[in-house]
Image (cartoon, rainbow, N blue to C red; front, side, top):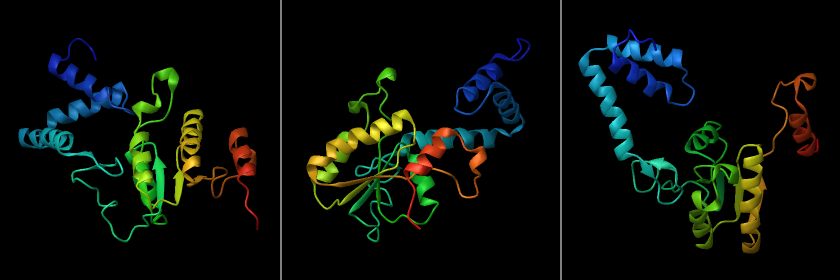
Length: 200
């Protein structure tokens, strides 16, 4: 922001810009909007941030974010206890739940393996996953990590850990989206579509 702006406004803009997906122009618009809000609304906004940070923590079972000791999904008696869907982050749980097709449990890793970035297995919630599975009752683990180098490496690493336990490990199918056209698909998407083809 230009030097003619007040320092607190510059700092506020920089804080908003530090959030993922928010560029400097968007951050500036948000900061100026905050200046138009009444003080009570600003205090409520700030309190919501503090409450979320202080009250939300990881579920002791699946590591998803919750304000309870055990999240509603883990505590739901109607969920299939024998299947665990492993995802990278809490927002992936939300994405899968939107389909209304999956009725099992989850495990959130809070990241993917990336040795170049210093993210090794001990930095993820893999130990907690193994502890859950060693308790018995799990028949299948679905690896729902993204189809990236890191996602594939993480899925393979966990699959190798689970093989000696006799657990079925599956991977999400990746390929062409519904309504997609072959001519517009990139090589990796086409390769995945062919690799994960189904019988008709």
